[in-house]
Amino acid sequence: MPEEIPTQYTIQDVAVFSKGYLQDYPVFVRNTDNGLLVLGYPKDSFMKLTGNYFPIRAIRVFPLFITGILAIDIVLLFLVYYFSKRKISKNTEPIMASIKTLSTGKPVDLSIRGELSEIADSVNQASQVLSRQNQARANWISGISHDIRTPLSMIMGYAQRIAGDHEASGNIQQEAEIIRAQSAKIKGLVQDLNLVSQLEYEMQPLHKEPVRLSKLLRSYAADLLNDGIPEKYSVETEISKDAEAVVIECDARLISRAINNLVQNSINHNPQGCNIFLSLDCSPEDISITVADNGVGMSAEKLRELEEKPHYMESTDERLDLRHGLGLLLVRQIVEAHGGAIKIESAPHGGYKTIFTLPRPISDTSASAPPRTCSRSCP
Image 1 (cartoon, rainbow, N blue to C red):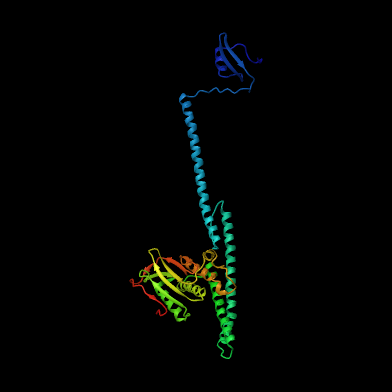
Image 2: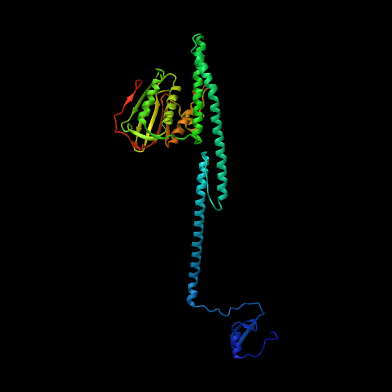
């Protein structure tokens, strides 16, 4: 026992140290038959709580209290996770949409603040680079197209002059006519390439106006027949009663160009001749224009290649009239620029059919009229 610990105690002293400490020594008190047994330990060896009394009700409620605290913590963690995820999703959705738009070659402009602002800036920089590249590519195609026109026009002019020269031999006139015809096809391909580029990079504005498609289709058929297509080709038009008075907002020049490309495909791929059918029909949702022929058609493999790679069709040789992919690509882009869709149907020796649909007309300008058909004598 330490020397400073007394050996005599009063009742008050016993009441004090029985609480836990005797002159800063932790002690434990036990009642025995011979009196009180006091066990003391070195200082700082034990810590005894002197106010260790709690209500029974509090002890019973303590597990519920702990459970409630855990439940509140879980709810708070969920709320933090939810709002954090919501904030991230809110910022990532426009980024994902912009990346998807970039994959189509179209420019984007993102404005996002916070932690994802650096990603948005990177997307904007990529968009600017892509836009400059597209602009440079379109300008290059436009420049090449412009530079080709002048020498091509001279070739066509001289070829036509030689073909019309009665002093030239028959073979020379025939070869000059071939040069003129092939030059005309090259000129058409250059124009298609330039227009495809402008539509692809959205540099070709659509001059939309109310157009009555039945009138446009009949006018095209009449112009085609008046231009004098060979006798081995026939052209028939059919316009349904419901589509007779249909008017839509569209670029009449581009729609006519799409129809003409399809008709020229039918002519070019059926040198033995065929019947060409132009029809117009509508439903409550959309209006459809069909260009079909009863020619040689196309195999399932070629049809699949055409749908997957419309402007890279393989040909048996290098003749331009066998490479028809660019024209069909132009048709697809014209239709899609008007918010429509295109469908191709064909089978070997079963003809070829292209259907493109445009959104339902905004109005009808006249009462329905009975369907009309026309052939080579179409007015």
